[in-house]
Length: 408
Image 1 (cartoon, helix red, strand yellow):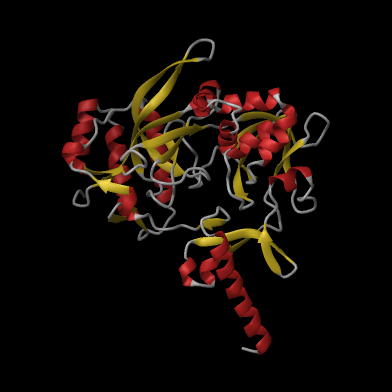
Image 2 (cartoon, one colour):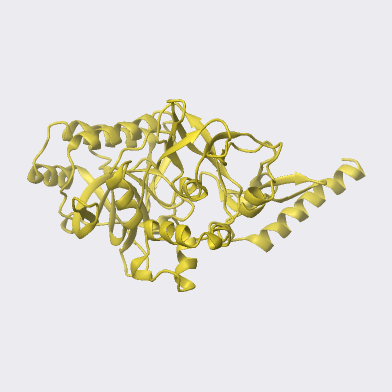
């Protein structure tokens, strides 16, 4: 290796190490497909299994299971999935899903369901956070928005595609200690720097010449919440429908504007919801720029033929797909949750929160969904989905199921 190359290589190593020391723990580090941590799930005895019952019909569950099988059939059969201290390969995960699918196709009663699971499945419980075993469940949905493929005085706010200068660096290529970590930024003046933040993108034209707009929306707040949800359906002014889906971020840390509005006394904690945030931004438009820019994270999109599509690149199932921390829980896994859902009246107001339980599939992830004590349930689209997703902040329990290895 000549002197110049040697110096160049050493400078890259030094840069990587310094960057790690400066920013470790910050969301500028993006995880690759890591192994699931052993501490997130604990296998429980059959005597401690929950009362398995489901508040939805089996058709949606069947669709969700099939989507997980679709994903599992695309990965190597030897790929491993960790359930606490136990490890199963993709082939076993598929068998586990198929056995469960064949059983629910018989439309079993609650008693038959519980007996079947007790006899054939291992069950693991999330350790949760705060109170042991407790998981905070929130919700998300697919926004239905009006838009155009052409900019105009009515449609002024762009849904951007992934920029050409967005760079992702796999740090493990430089040092094994950085396995599973990568930097998202841009290359300029022979160095890598953080990518533009929300303010620079929306108010300073930082993306000019670097990407194109997929479509244009009427409202900046709609665009912000589309980014929070990660996908949406755009009804274009020419009559077409566009499905847009998450295609990366600028690598900046996600910061909650809801927490900002609580901390600054703008919205009481007990009243916080997506709907309250929207109302506040519309009532105080002079504060919108400051509030929205508090979250420097920015999401880029791509067009899909159908949607919404989750992290596993399969179609999400309303009420059945859930977003969890992908570092902690087995992707595509069959799960079971117990928490609360809203009941609404004819005026679209919530009059009660009702306890429910159901089977769900781990098919998505999210920037704010971190740790064993967080889960985000996909509610679908429409009025009820928007209300449920906007208001859901309820604790509950999370379990994972997998076929006993001696059941063949």
